[in-house]
Structures are given as structure tokens and as C-alpha cells.
Length: 160
Image (cartoon, rainbow, N blue to C red; front, side, top):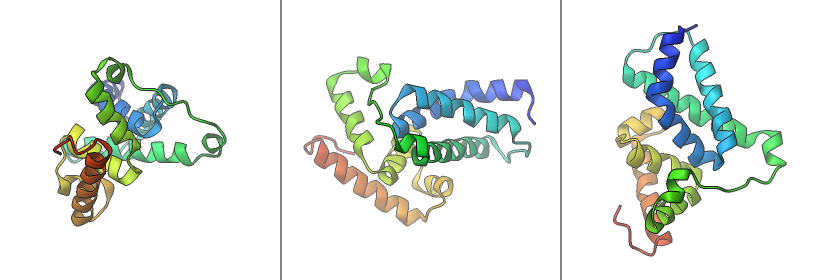
């Protein structure tokens, strides 16, 4: 079990990343906050040391993605109709940013994941492959296809 100081440092360092990943997948604030708590409780209880800060970050992202997928597959979630809402940041952003965000959120999950990790978190394709447990060429293919879908959805205006 980790110390309170370690958990507080991790929350301070990774809170935005976890919330953004959750919001991209779950598209509502309440579920995002639930998964946020789940991720950091798992971090608190995870006693093994991390090899590096990058390993710790990748672990947090992987746990977040898995928790989101588990929630989306849950019996309760499948029996309710989700309310689609945008984050305050997206709501205050200009029209073009909202269109891009909506286009990204509309992508199928595998494409949404690689686009998010590449463009929002700054990971390279080999790093994304490691995080998602996929072949590097698969990541490159998904990035290319996702860019094409975004270009098509946005009327060819975005040069990704």
C-alpha cells in the first residue's frame, strides 16, 4: 500500500490525464468522477514499485482505460441511456474546437484511443503500442484510418 504523500503526488500529476481519458470514453462527468476515484484507489493499493515515471504513467493510463471499458460493459450501464454532455472546457471553446472534439468522440473506440494518446498525450506510435498491448503497425494503421475518418467527418478541413 502506498503512502498518502505518494497518492497525493500521483493525483496532482495525473488527475487531468485520467479525467480526459474518462471523459473521452464515458462522455459524462459523473461516470468520469467514479472512474477517477477507482483509478487512484487501485494506485493506493498497488504495492509494486514502478521502474520509472513513464512506467507509472503508462500504468495509470492502462488502468483508466480498463476501468472505462469495464464500466461501459457493465449490466447497469447497458440498461441506461447516457446523457451526452461536453466538458466546460469544450463548451467554452470556439465552434471549430467543438466540432473537432465531437468528431473525435464519434470515432470508434480503437481509433479514439490512438488519436487521444497521440495528439493529446503526445505518445509516439511505439509507446502507444506498448500501452495498448498492440503491434506498432496496428497503431500506425489505426492512426491513419482515424485521420481519414476525422478528415471525412470534418469535410476535409483538418490536416492531421
